[in-house]
Amino acid sequence: MLKGTSTSEAVVVETPARIGRTAIGALGVLALALGALQSVVEPALPLLQRELGVSPGEGALIGNVLLITGAVVTPVAGKLGDRYGGKRVLIWLMAVVSAGGLLAGLAPNLPVLLLGQVLQGVMVGALPLSFILVRKHLSPGESQVAIGLVVALFTGGGMVGFLFAGPISEGLSWHWMFALPTIVIIATTAVVSRLMPHDPPIQSDSGIDWPGVVLLSGTLLAFMLGLVTVTRDGGLPPLAVGAIAVTVTALAAGWIAVERRAASPMVDLRMLAKPAMWHACVLTLVITTSSGMVLLLLPQLFAVSADGYGFGAGTTAIGLFLLPGAIVGAASDSVGGIAARRFGPRAVVVVGTVVTAATMIALASLHSAEWQLVLAKVLTAFAAGVATTALLAGTATAVETKDTGIATSLLVVTRVIGVALGAQIGGAILDAGADPVTGLPTKSAFATGFAVAGLVAALSLLVVRFMKKGAQA
Image 1 (cartoon, rainbow, N blue to C red):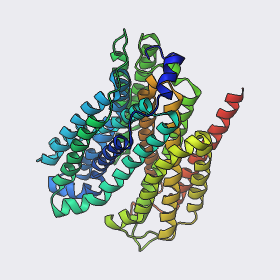
Image 2 (spheres, rainbow, N blue to C red; image 1 turned 90 degrees about the vertical axis):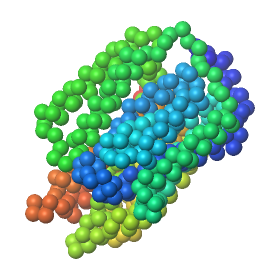
Image 3 (cartoon, helix red, strand yellow; image 1 turned 180 degrees about the horizontal axis):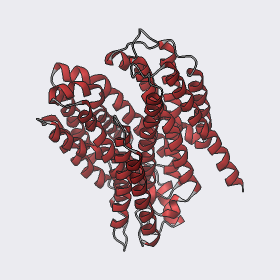
Image 4 (tube, rainbow, N blue to C red; image 1 turned 60 degrees about the vertical axis):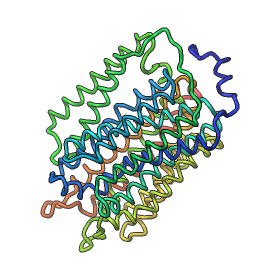
């Protein structure tokens, strides 16, 4: 296992499944509860601002700190899972998430709630840890299907949280929308701990590459903080943006230099340089950037006053409009694992890209009726979900078993970055096209945004073609 020889690798891959449907189901329920806990803030943000007496800018921090923590912690969790065992690290991670959920549920003010959100943010690391477990205990084909199921339930949990945050916070209190999913997480973690067999840690003479951990975490932290700050109202002056770019570049260069010299690097750069790995990272970034634009543009257009070109929809109505897309998106994650197993990730990406690009370009001129936007959301959610999950499942079975956690965690982080980047691009387009009198985005700004989202998605086709030529060469 330590040296990743072909003999030991074959033993792990070909061993019959040692976990049954009950254990996989427990992982799925855990993912569902985590997704619900992650998503409850978005629909309840106006209520939280009123209850806590904070401004919209301060309220935005409630969701942003979770995103930042998730991006920073995920690769570290994946690496620790590879080294010390996915089950062990998952249990500890869920203890931190549970503490954060309970703290948020009891929070009397914004600082305590923010601390709870910081602790909850480590939940994103649960995905690569789940992938480690199914990869070690199932065959490659079964692993792809199981990975798709876990991702689908995490996405579905987001839908559950989005739908029930309002009724729970209004019927009970906003504290319960954090407490209830946390209780489920605690109970399900106990079930996973009992049913999931222990995966032995990898014995190594080298310790953890802590300089690499610190530099990679610093790089991601600087990037995400910069991205979140840039997207807030008013943005940053060009000099500050340049300083952030220089900082991120310097940290990334330092991380690469350290990894080249480390005896047991945080990320094996040779693994990262493998075509299956970096191809998946590039494609995931492009696809999720387009998805991030869609996630921002559609709700904004629904909310525009019906007196103009919009629909004047409130929060509840927007949620109902987006619900079909959320359902299809959750289902597409499970389909992505199956499709990757049958057709291969590349073919799935091509189909998903064509659907997304065609849909968004068509929407640039056809967005005068609610059903057009709802249909666009359904098509793009399905296409993006299938493509990114196929890439994730394909990568999990393409790398050595000992690298499953760190490889999949890098892809999960890439998804987070892509969505955040897409949201920034979409917001910048709307700001640039705002009416100088009202300050609201014009109809042409939305048309431009949809067209750009389609063109960004179409970049995936060029990337796939370039990668195919490179492989042939």
